[in-house]
Length: 499
Image (cartoon, rainbow, N blue to C red; front, side, top):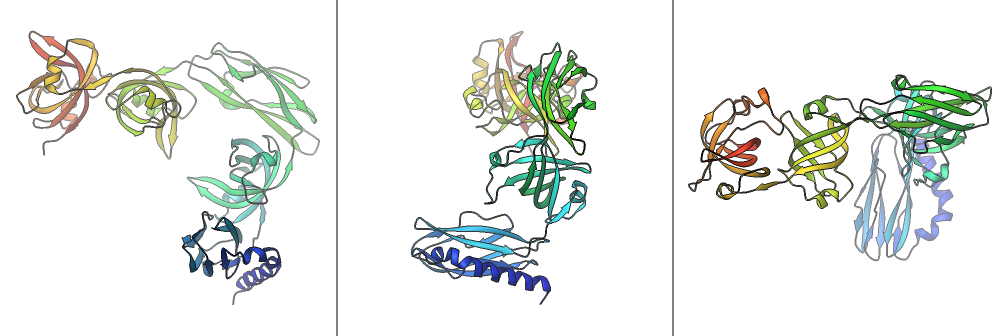
C-alpha cells in the first residue's frame, strides 16, 4: 500500500474515533440511521459506500462540485449510498447533510491529507490546478459581496478569489471585514476558468488592515460632469506620507492639482468622447511595508451613435453607444435579452433596463428600437450591456391583403410576407410578392437592414441569395406612386429559400 493511502486511512480512522462521541446522537436518529457518518476517499480517486436506513423519504440536497453522490434521495427502507471523487493533488474535506423527517444527519467526507503550499501569486499562476495554496497579498478590487469574489495582488502578480468562506464553509463576507487596500492571507484550491487563475472558496487566515483609507470625497458620487472640474479626496492616514498613482489610461484627462497633508486634489479635463473611468491608488508606509487604498472615479461623456458593425469593432469599456435596429429575436423576455440588426450587422443585447422593463414596454420581433449601452463581452462574444431603452417604431404584422387597404403614411410601419414572383431591379431589390390568393404587392427596394443608404442599398439580393420563389418578409411603410401601392422603406427581415 502507498504511504499516502496509509495516511488517508489513518486520518479517517482518527477522525472517526474523535468524532463518534460528538456525532453519536445523530448517528442513532430514529428517523434515519447510517452505517458510518464518516467517508474516506483515496487521493487517486475512487468510491466508498455507506448504508442508509430511513423510516420515510430522505434526500441529500447539496454536495461540492468535486464529489458525486448516488443516489441523492430515496424512500423508506435500506439503501446503499455511494460517494465518488476524482483524483486530487491535495486533500479536501466536505460535509453533506441527509434530510429525513425534519431531522438532519451529517456525513463528513475526507479525501487525502490537506497539504498547503505557501506561494506568491506568480507561483499560483504557474502551478497546477486543484493544488491548495496559501497566498498573502493586497485586496485590490471587490467584485461580489454575496460570495466574496475579489482580487488579490502581491509584487509578483494578481489572482482572483472566487468565493470566500468562513470556518463553517459558509459565504459570510461581512464577517471578514476585508476592504480594498487590506493585506490578506487566504488559503484555497487553484482552478483556471476562461484563462483566469482563481482560488475557489478560499478561507481567510489573516487580515492586516491598511493604514490608509479614503475618508471623504467631493463630489460624493465620484462622478464628474462632461465639462470636467476638480475632484477632492481626504484620506485617513496612520502611515508616513501620501503617494498617489494616476493610472496611465487616465493620464491624458486626470492630473494632481495639489497634495496638502492628507488631502489630494485632482484636475479633471472636459470629456469630448464617451464615458470614461479609472481608479486612483493612494499609498503610505510604516517604514517596513507599503499600504494602499483606492478610489474609483468616472466622468460622463458624449453618446456615440454608430452602425452596429462599428459597435462590434469597438473595445470593451464604459463608452456609451446609441444603436438603432430591428429586434430579430428575443432570447429572454423577462430580462429583455434580444438581438438587434441594422444594415451593417447584428448585436446581442444583454438585458434592456431592469427585470420586467422589456415586458412593460411591449417590444417584440420586428420593432425598430433605439438603445443606449456599453460595449461588453462574454466568452469572446460582443454584446451591449446596461442597455437603456430610448425609442421605438412599432411594427405591425399584417397580410398583403390588409396592407393594401391601409392609409398611406411614412410614420406607420408594417411587416408583410409573401412569395417573390418577379424581380424588377436586381441592384436595389425592387420586386413583387404575392400571398397565393390573388393579392400582389410591389416592394420598392429590399435593403439589408435599417439605416441603409447610398451604396449600402445596392446588391443585397445577390449577396443574400434571394431569388424568385423565395418566401420573403419585409418591413416598411405604405405609399402609392402613380396608382401603384408600394411597400417603401425596404427593410429586410428574413427569407426562406424556395428549395
